[in-house]
Image (cartoon, rainbow, N blue to C red; front, side, top):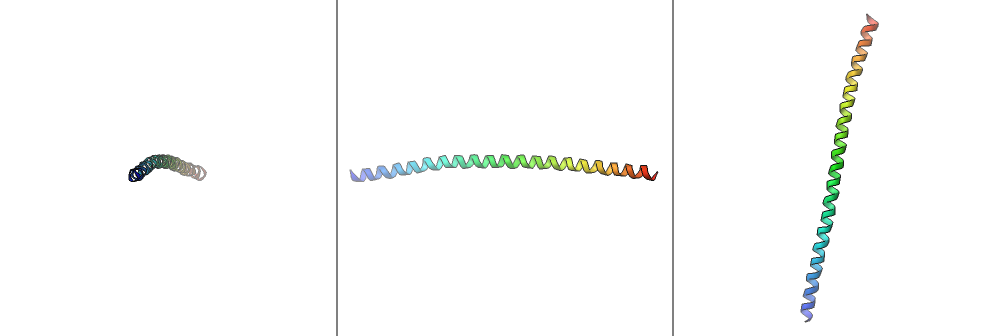
Length: 73
């Protein structure tokens, strides 16, 4: 009887450990997914900012070029 109780407590502890592991693994996967979403969002914003800056630089060069030609001509 004593051996059966010891075996049952070991099995119960192992089952509880598995349940806790699976619960924590789910949280860890959720945190990683959220982190990946955040990184993707930041990457998209950086790409958009880069595109806007490039466009602004191109327009600025064009404006300066026109101003120089107007003053020289």
